[in-house]
Length: 569
Image (cartoon, rainbow, N blue to C red; front, side, top):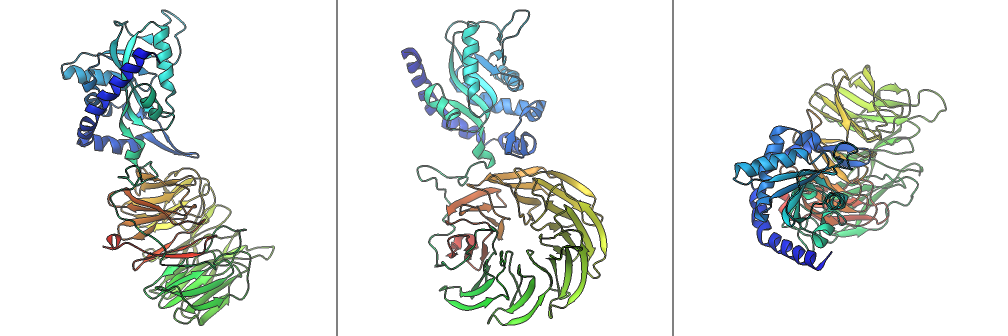
């Protein structure tokens, strides 16, 4: 960059600092800005096998969207006093002419230059379409999207090659991924890059929505601070990463581990009050959500047993071996006093497993429906439709009558489902290990809608609420999809892949990531309000209740925290 260019760069930066904040804040407060934000989520984002990608053509090739975007972008451009708009490639075209029209309505005449991806090979063989302007004419680059920022060098090369000597004072973009080697580097070295939207505006930030440097903290208080107590003796094997989740009550914390032990700890002090040891110590131990029912604990173990313990003493109320192994979390029907569980059979033949109904008081089998393949996934029970839904490793999903076990329907999914489906009204939701989310009609298994949820993940315990289906993908994204259509309602970026499902605490959704981070989402505001680090490797969600959070890690023991009273209101 020449000395003259250096001075121009400083001048442009000073202009940006003087005019940008108040103008930008005014633009963001417009209702059109909020409307366009929703349109980005609905039309411009693709959830692919690699994560989140963008394509703004469908959105901005709509005349209404292009016009609204142009009105706001013109307000950002106007303070620079430019006479020329430069648009690279095909994506910038609708914005270029819509902004020129918005400026004309405001009394300003702007010319347009369009930069091709490469020089045209016929007729005038231009690289830049549009007339030559006097040297030093002030101009801005306009584009729909910036990531790595390679388009800037393309524009500069094309302008120089076709004899355009212009003073580019800024780059105005509809959406900025705000990457270190993209807009941030360009703003430091060339000219300010001013976006209408940054990725943070749609939740693609690892920090809270209002986080500010240098500590990148927001206005919300810390959700948790130091552990209230910490027990290191938990989970020993590394051969299977999924472990059991704790249970929190007012008096006790209950936790199972991969050695097939179940322990009760004093909720306030962490003192061990009793410990139960399963009949055997199989490879995977207890790998599920413990169920706390009527002052008792109910769980399956990988040794094939289903057990009910008295919560106060650890005394066995009943225990039956129902199969060769059990991964699944039981589904409980308190009204009719029964539970439903998937069991696996390692007999070298058929069947490979069963969906079983057991009497809640005695553990006696009520009925058993044969599976065609191994069923490690957890079943889900629906009292309204009086049915139970279970999945198998042959990519089938079966719905049976809850009273008899008679099959109502069977369908196939696009990938394995080894977590737990969710039922909301007449809709059944299943997330597969190939990155697909299925919405089926619970009454007959017919497909209502299906779509990708992002990079494939595993062991999804699907969560619904607020008219949304909540999914954690295999990369680092938390996604809320519209329950009726599957359209994106809102999303957020985590620091590492999230585990299983968000955990509810009133209006807040608590998400734990594999590297031990905790994110707190406000489901009403559709925002991440706090983010912190608990530590350890974690592949199972926490338990949150009565002002306590219990986190069972894979390598750093059991940690229990007090939850800030702000979040308990």
